[in-house]
Amino acid sequence: MFAHGQSYVAISRATSWENLEIQSFDPNAIKVDDAMLSELNRLQEKFNTMYLS
Image (cartoon, rainbow, N blue to C red; front, side, top):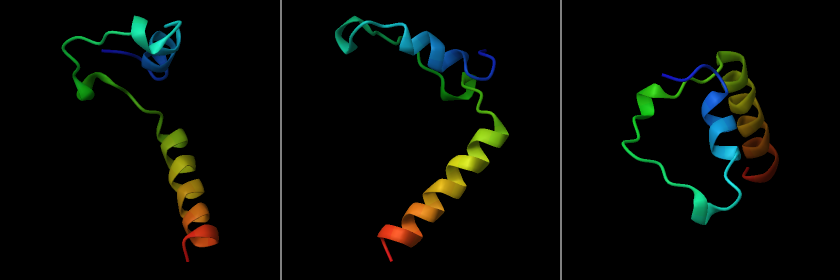
């Protein structure tokens, strides 16, 4: 189980997509910060209102 942000840090260490291999991926092991998720949703709604309406 990763802490908030650890999965991003781990994946961002790869120097290229060819060097990245994820085995036995479990989406439940990825933790998302609630404040970040709220901000992402806010920004998506704003984008949708501005550009998709």
